[in-house]
Amino acid sequence: MGQMLKCVSPIDGSVFAEREVLSRDAAFGVASQARGAQAAWAARPLQERIDLVMAGVTAVGAMNDEIVPELARMMGRPVRYGGEFGGFNERASHMAEIAEASLADIAVGEDETFKRYIKRIPHGVVFVVAPWNYPYMTAINTVAPALIAGNTVVLKHATQTLLVGERMAQAFHAAGVPEEVFQNVFLSHDVTHDLIAGNAFDFVNFTGSVGGGQAMERAAAGTFTGVGTELGGKDPGYVMEDADVDAAVDTLIDGAMFNSGQCCCGIERIYVHESLYDDFVAKAVEIVKGYKLGNPLDAETTIGPMANARFADEVRAQIAEAIETGAVAHIEAFPEDDGGAYLTPQILTNVTHDMRVMRDESFGPVVGIMKVSSDDEAIALMNDSKFGLTASLWTRDVDRATRVGDQIETGTVFMNRADYLDPGLCWTGCKNTGRGGGLSVIGYHNLTRPKSYHLKKVTV
Image 1 (tube, rainbow, N blue to C red):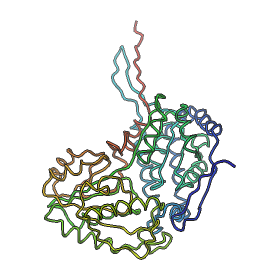
Image 2: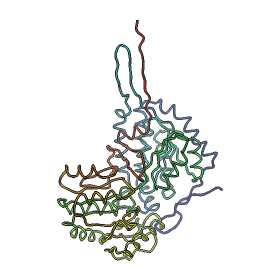
Image 3: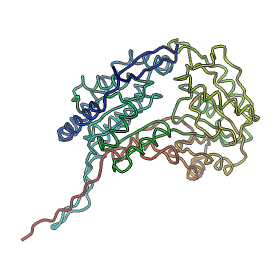
């Protein structure tokens, strides 16, 4: 038996699932099958591809009663939240609805002499490397539009959510998507590198850590394979003096703590106008003290364990370092905090950007809150980051939000909301958050290439 991938459950540290990785030859065989099937798949009518993909989505939904507790066991999200099918279906449905218009030829001009237009052509074989924190929703962001556009897809999922890709492939195959068109694989890092470096794929979409994204780009160097990356963030919230403070607290603290803070676009730092600061902090502390930390299979649990004890260790280290240098912690340790994956959610004040908790990605249930006195101060602090995924602005003034948003180095500007992915908008980032863009019409453009037609008519 070869190398095994093991999903260790954060609930109790037991091995929940394990799968053997493919050999190098077998992995290249999968890619070859995908390439061999691509032309026939792309030749099918667009509506037929859409219908098959959406039938696969429906088949995933039919598994939801099994998927929800399975996710709890694999990565710790409480069952009370019902899984990811709502967002999974919303994103796939939107991409299906806009497919015809997004993939339509771009007419440049036609007269008695010439016909000119641009077609959108599928790349060929798309490799999707999906993360564990929202394993179904992040995967469907690329899987659905890639298949609809006429690509074949090879999906590699994170070890922490080992069974997700298997379930998706099972559902899509049962719905009629050919097995060679959508394949799930279990791969080692070395074989993943060799596949990309060996031109096995025509486009790579990676969601994960900065280090992981750098590894993907290094593997693709010199191959001219396109690489799209979404590599996390340190997303800020800014509460202006005219904000609805109750709504701001509810949304921003939920954005910081939901899924145990393990959200790519989770709120990791909050800047509050000095006139609202004390009220905001008091309300935030009250909310977090009301959380119930515990086994995610328990319907009473509102915050589960982090997906892995080593992730919790990093958050604890950031909190401890901040407190040592003057930060104030407002939440006493919960009885259920075991020093491992079960971690007390924390609110910190008296923080500065000299502290790692305000600079490095925490990806856990902790948020620092700072007082500001002006838009200029808030903008400078929000931009003082190596990441740029989203920013959440709280004000009653749309024009002001637009002015402030125009000055923030980020991929998405929210006003009076946070931590939501609208499939009608491009999901993108800047700085160390990566390059590329998913969903929306731009998602289709990134999963296809332009091909120009300049046709001269024969005239007599």
